Structure formats: structure tokens, C-alpha cells
Length: 227
Image (cartoon, rainbow, N blue to C red; front, side, top):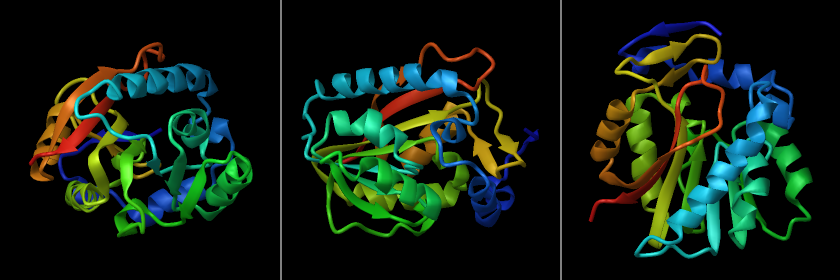
């Protein structure tokens, strides 16, 4: 994995390059996790635990419909979101991942719509959501596109609805660009500044535990629009 520091991710993130990278990834759990299958169980456990804490917040979101952004083959939908929500919609730009997700989830009784589109082009859903879950995908959006995305999906939230982000962050103040998949890993302070520009605020945050120490720190953030 080739990385370098940068402060201008508008220029270095390339949607086509990211799409090409993922088009060569196998539609398996191992592929989705970058061959780090050992993190799957702690990842799922951490997410389920965070969701349970979120449902204790006031005002409390409902459990009717959830949107899984950057859903891949539906790993998070299957193991986390469908354990809590009646219906789960998926957004995923890779067609083969969408087909695998449909195959895996069609008999779950919880599968809603599958939108085969990148987050930068996902304009609207005919449904509104109690929770919008976004995991390991915002690193493929430049700052301005991320603000635009947050602004759009904020309008899709039901009353008491919230956004949950699960993402890598750098340990210091450095922005790190990965040439291989054309992604950017931001420091938490940078990300919080982008949330503020999106008229959003964090109401709960928690660090993922039991991941290998050599990986970027991963945090789960519950986010609501500023009213």
C-alpha cells in the first residue's frame, strides 16, 4: 500500500481510479476487509454494541428503515444492521458487489432497495431513514464532495434519525493519501471541521477495540443535524 502525506485531497482523489481498484477485489468478506478477515468479528461486535448504545440516546431513533452506504457485498447489512432494523437499503457503486449482496440478503426478510451508484452521485431515495450507516467509504470522497454528500443525506433522515460513521482516522494531524486505491485518511479534527460545515454535530463517539495496533484507529460516530 503506497501512502503519502497531502493537504489537498480535492486533487489526489480520483473516482475512476478508486472504482477500478475495487473492480479487481473479490466479492467476499476477505476482499471487503482488505484480506484482514481477523477483524471481522470484533468489527461486528463493536458496531452492534455501539448501535445498542445509540438506541439509548434521547431522542431515540426508530428501527424501521436503515441505509447502508458503501455497502459492498452486504457484510455490515447482514451481520449488524439487519439485526436491528426492519428494512435495510444499500448503496454500492460496484455492480458485482450489488449482485452478491442481493444473492446473500434476498431471503433475509429485511432487504429493501439496492442502489448501484457511487456516494458522490447518490442524490435521493424514495424512502427516509432512521439511521444512515456509513462505514469505510468516506475516505473516497474529497472534502467538498463529502460536505455535499452529508448535506444531501441529512434531508433523508426521519424525525430523531441520525447518521453513523465508522471510519479510519490518522493518529495525529496528518492527512494521508493512499495512491493504490485513491483514498484519503483524515485526522479527527479535520473530519469534525467538515461536519460543522455540513451543519452536523457528533452526539456520541467511541473507538473500535480489539483491532491490530498497526492499523489506523477506527472510530464510530453518531451524528445529528444542527437545528
